Amino acid sequence: MIETPDDVLGPNGLLARTLPGFEWRPAQLALAERVAAVVAEGGVLLAEAGTGTGKTLAYLVPAVQSGRRVVISTGTRALQDQLANKDLPLLRAALPGGISSAVLKGRRNYLCLQRFEEAPPKADVAWPALARWRATTATGDRAELPEVDENAPVWDALTVNAEACLGGRCPHYEACFVTRARARAAAADVVVVNHHLYFADLVVREAGGAALPDHDVVVFDEAHAVADIAAVFFGVQVGTGRVEAWLRDAGRVGGGAPRVEVGAVAAAAAVLFEALRPPEGGRAPWPDDGMPAAWVDAWLALDDALAEAARALVAGAGEGEPVAALARRAAALRDDLARLFDPHGDETAVAFREARGRGTHLGRQPVDPGARLESSLYARRHAVVFTSATLAVDGGFDYARRRLGVPDHAAEALFESPFDHAGRARLFLPADLPAPGSPQHPAAVAAWTERLTALTGGRAFVLFTSVRNLAAVHARLRDRLPWPLLRQGEAPRDQLLTRFRTTPGAVLLGTASFWEGVDVAGDALSLVIIDKLPFGVPDDPVLQARLAEARDRGEDPFRRVQLPGAALALKQGFGRLLRTGADRGIVAILDPRLTARGYGKVLLRALPPAPVCRELDELAGWWRAVAEPGSPD
Image (cartoon, rainbow, N blue to C red; front, side, top):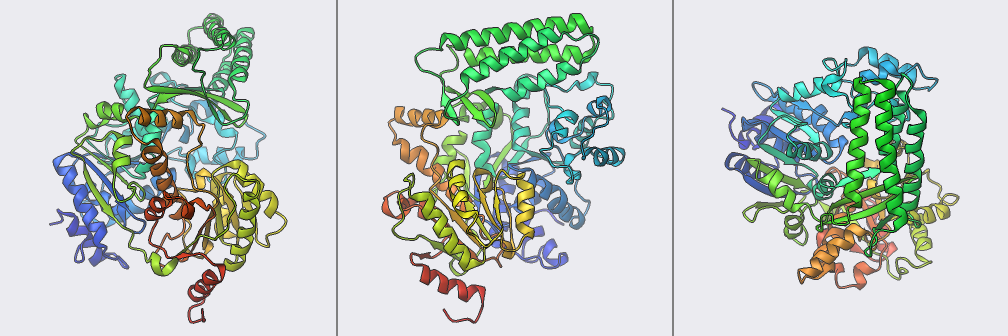
């Protein structure tokens, strides 16, 4: 009988007997037993499992054995695809009776048959590949077509979000790839989704609908990202992209669509977003002393334009479903704008405006999502598991508990990474660094990048806390490094990672999206350089609201909010280095505060136990010894 995690993952379990190269990991089995207990008994589990623990199988095995429908929610599509293409097939082949599983992604990941039918053949170089794929694909999942970049403009014309989808009124509804994916999910025992889709479903369920099949157990992997994503979905968002999508779709409607009224929406939106765009970029709060009259006038002008355009569309193009859908979307935009501009809005939420590239984004979200999670998640699910390689701070889960609002009786489990950080890694903290934010700091980061990549032969990630810092260092390095230099923004992330893995000695400069969810194993990556401690942007209105909330509770805002957040982010950045037990390398943190400030001890304790080097000669001797076994120090 195969009834317990030990029967599968134990030293004499099924995988040890049947899977070549399987290595029994005591921490993996212990985590699996903790997951099995909460799935059987109900409740909430917070579990940190360091890199190399094998946490994926540790929660999949008890999920499969439970006999319940379990939803696995991931923070990245990369992990979603790993579960679908590697971990679940492995268990399906090994376990008697197999596994019923399905992967479900957001609508924008699937080709829309209606949009494809409406679109004329394009001069775009991607069109022939798209047409061939359309004729053969069984899933319509864009991940099947890596030769067409995920950010290619053609996808905007061939996919839809939930707001634009015609749903059951679409002539292609039965053949729709989303409809089919949902049908597979409804028949599966294990459904793999991502956090964005999961929280979109929670919001829809509060309104009486559903995007996912009913389930009573959910496992959140990469759970360190859950609170921020939940807060976004529990709020309201309106940006230039959403309005531009409405305008594009309005332009597709035939039958004498009212160009004047639709054009008025474009003009009014341009005025509103230009008025609210933060002049210095980034995020900015809405004013505390009342809304400027010009903002209110611009909002009301857009509200009137949307209402008039919706009426004109119905009058000019008839009562067809595409027109009705546009009218509903216009009404939803008006409702969301009204919520944003409501002077008596939710006092527990924070409103902000944000520059995103050439666009502007307006948002309002709860300061912390715990209260909503309590009512919409914990009260409605038999068991909830949060797991990540970075969930605990200073050996405890207080920070995660506060952010996620988990019940007091929630269980905890902490498993250190089994990797030999003491023997295979070094933390380099050079002395006499200039203060972060000083004019000399970018030059120092560039100089240390030159010295350290000379030691490792390139093969480095240089991680930055801001695009500005990245640009300043890139300008100093682009004509000085002998290694191929890659920069975030010059190509989509997945393309950059592929180039990094396949280009000997490459050095990649990246910001937030490269701090986590990036897996480069082996000799391609031997050095991670972090320019500054990853504290939140001080003037970010969401962070400011969280600090104010802590202050109102009589707590130290820095110790309760900023420091634990930085500790988790720093641990994520460090975690890019060792991805397998055979990897080795160096993490360099170029921020003198780590050793000069008292709080640096908390941050250092958060990191894996790699010995610290302060001198380059000492570091070089160690590196020669591990990179060239048998060589003298």
